[in-house]
Length: 277
Ligand SMILES: [Zn+2]
Image: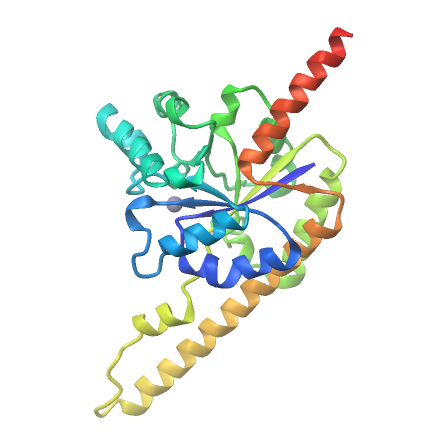
């Protein structure tokens, strides 16, 4: 079994809060960045991109402006794919994540011009029964490399709760079950994370003025909001840490998207050679 951790949109939280956890377990991940927003408020900075790359994480493209690629003209589509690749040319970008996970045959055709793989997302309606089929799919032909499926950890799971918001025990049992069932199978599981607003971003969103007749209410609301934010961040990081620890301890190969593609390619070549003998 192969596993891959991917991060979309280049949010500050990923660098500040999750990357240290990856480092703690020696795991490398793929960061899909929107080049038009790098170094904006709440986004990973260029200096941080360089740091992630230096520590052997994969830098991938999530287009230049995060537009739905299926909804734009050929010219704009080409521009989006080419521009983000150019802006990240220092970082050997090989793979793309489609914004909103949206792609079609035309998008795949254009993606093939510039990238070795394209990753979508999916939110399984039946987590237990559908995932195996989905992830076997990731190991298929060269063309399927442009239709890679990843579990979106923060979007709707039945009963419409993101998996990262499940109570810890339920979160752990779902992941444990999935990993244990698949561990010896020929399967490639890709996880996708977005993360949360950092505490600093949260405080910027809060009402600044704490005065007037509602002084007490607004002060309390602010304190409660920050308390809740802090707890959510702690809970999220604890779950993420636990998942990384599992991936580290179990006999699972955790690699970046481009490493997995290379590995599968070599394996295929090796198998072909083996069959010829
Ligand atoms: Zn995105």
